[in-house]
Length: 187
Length: 301
View (cartoon, rainbow over the protein chains, first blue to last red):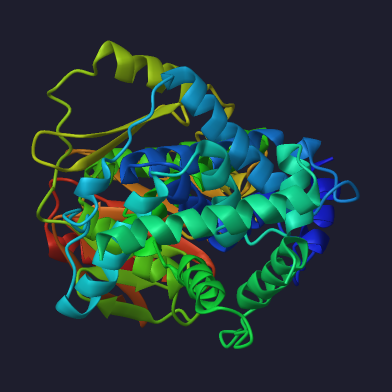
């Protein structure tokens, strides 16, 4: 069972060696997708710690549920980001509260990571961007995260969110418009 | 342009940006449209990974769990790793700085040769053994009992991770605790049955010492521990076949490279480790001088 699973995953992920152990395949999945999953979490959550915790949960679920993945039903990325989406949704349901950044705080948002000087400007911009994202509605934020962290097509996002493809495009366009307005108001 | 077409174009342009085309622009459209494309490019290119400092530790935790749950055989591999950890308890406590260094090695594992590769506080003996000098945190700090919440997490997940009052990241795991079938050999001549590779034994032992027993794991064929008894504390020689599954990291206050009969090795505090072909050896002889330990090691043939 494990061997079959490993081979199908290896094929799906275009791994060179099809007879590697599941632990190897899992390591490959982690290395390949951690940054994207973490970015997805950061685009949807307001804190670095929450993003790390939930990213960890996603990979734990991947480990636990990998046997339920069928390559013929959906690309691996879509399956993975459906887990990520459910993980965040469950988290919000559990906490039933949202931490909104007041817009006034965006300008002064400090960088979370000590950095060399050359990275400071970039980090500050990212901090403003992340704070601005927190002003969007949950649905808009999720679509932006799916799109720009997950790299999913509108059709795939639509399937995951139960929307039509065209509606997904409209929401994405409007969400970026709104995000731009928020950022402009801070300039 | 109708809104439907605008959105359609926008979706296509965003997909082009995501596909790596940084020059997507539609000069015929209003600057606002192009501003949105610029914003899309910023969102797509934002690299947030550097701020996630737990990435490598998560990776190790998850892969260890993956190995632990695979098969009974794999459980035994983890058990042996934990056995080694008992001799190097500093493994349980590691600073973020050390994790960052480990991350570097996970990303750039280096050449796959038997040569020791020493950079800074990390010494690699081939691809499967990593030794870490960690004088900043030589011992774990178990003095603080786990909280009920931490204990519940340990019970549920098999591990718990927390930051202690000194800011060190502490990992405690129960992996390896399930009972396993050990095989005990009381005669050295029989011990070869326990491993798939050629068992090497010391031809020199301090005066009064002799073979006591050999321990290995049923069905594993990868690990064996030879114990020798004498007037002082037991002398232990562990041997393991090195591969991706059995690779390990160990930490000590001091790690010093040595050569044993032309093979690269290292002192990790008072223990000596070295490799011969695909087999790793760890010699623990508490109470013996370094010269005496070296003499034993050089006699292993």
